[in-house]
Image (cartoon, rainbow, N blue to C red; front, side, top):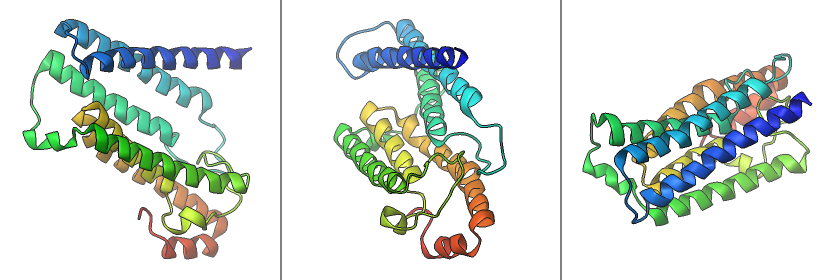
Length: 225
């Protein structure tokens, strides 16, 4: 019963946030007029429930047992969502409330619906091939679960972290297609967190568990591309 309540709660928060995001960007990218105060309020109704959702997902589902897993800071998709949501919140708070700064016009090159869409499609293709290799071996791709083998073929023979690479590409694409440059810029924060608090702990765990087998793979395939 408790698990059902948790699922219902996080689903409600997630879809409530998404519905507000949809309403906000229907206005933001459209031709309709909206009072600045209302736009800011709607942006908060989009981002705050998402922050709560992110916190609860980590609190409810992050494993407490450290015996056989990488000691990563959180689930990578949650890190991605947090970065995108934080970038959106800062951008809209500055635009509609604080109005402290303006980004240089050169950053407008990151406003492109077509390029953003292409990057998102490219990221989804990488996700597909990455997850497919795990599914072939019935392995769980979530880094908070135990690893039973090293997947070093397919797309993993080209990059050791294709799914994290896809998250970064997708974040850039989302920022471009939504015309929120902060989301693109915050890809650097996502990269920093993934590298230092997900990938490094994963590599340490895999080296300790698989020894020379993983070290050989690590030395022969680049981390990114």
